[in-house]
Image 1: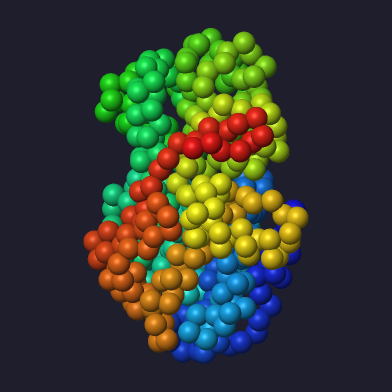
Image 2: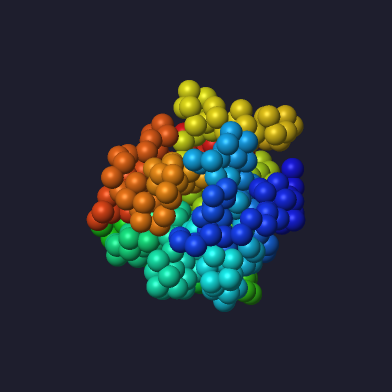
Length: 379
């Protein structure tokens, strides 16, 4: 099923007119307003829209059950098209005009870095930004709560497997922006730590990508494996260009690569791609959170197929709601922070998020999975 931005806003419950009360922004007697600057258009749009849909699926279920301490969650995602300036403009509007309680699940490394000063200055929480950049974990910020494992942890797991398999010739292809450079840097550091030499780095201009030239450079290098520091249609477009050459290295990607986009754009050609995964497998029905997601998805639309990106949004939403519950009936920014820092670990199968007064890293869970001919991940 495809979703427009209008559909998203309607199904998640926007259009409410309850006035905000004095005190912490975004919290009234009946509502908790949260906002997001998300990528709902452009090459990453099909993937990150699914994060929003998965989040809405859980928020709607919580609201139908009475909300959090009697308050309904109102979720307002704004499209930024993966443009940093639009992210800043959106965030400024959400914080200063709409008076949201927190920023939730916003997308991008450079984008998160650009808005953190504004959020910190206004004591507004950034919860679960879709980035694994080390800078947001190495430098503690009490208003930033990470959820997903870091890119460093993913890169270390990828390189570890390559070394174990005896792979000695590796290349890296990355998009030349904050996101791609962060991924490239983590692969480089992980390789140096294990004395694995990266024989070639190839960058792609995200605004004017030349996939044929990038694929030709990899084909000339003839690596055994290539790690892609990119996602969305940039990832699949490069793979298509690579398959047009004679080179057949093993392709590795990070967790931000959507299996749904792989299946849609590559079909059976996605077979053999290895992806880092930072959420429980949707194929493991013994995990309660997987059962819950599949049950709610089926109840909404029996014909909708499960989505890995949706499921990640679902996990983020479930973790956020736990934080809101721990914040208590007199919810405030301080009670939310204290609740997550002192309430103990939050576990969903192998996925465990941990927070303390000195650590907001969240989860460090990483596994590798390979895509089969049907586009399914095999762990």
